[in-house]
Length: 67
Image (cartoon, rainbow, N blue to C red; front, side, top):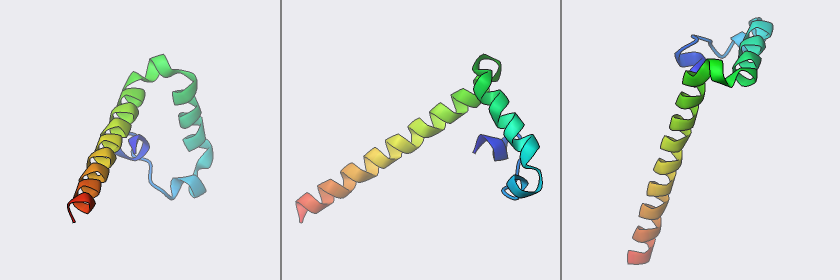
């Protein structure tokens, strides 16, 4: 998500220019302190999806228990 939103990579870049894409990804992994915004965005986005999944799973279970 971060690669497309902020670095402006598109899905076809993995086929047309994979070397540059993978170099950017490796740099983000190897230098986490230099890429704090990458890790912060990724962790917060993951937490958002986890929370949403948990909420909708519990809503679904409650509706099944009411029937």
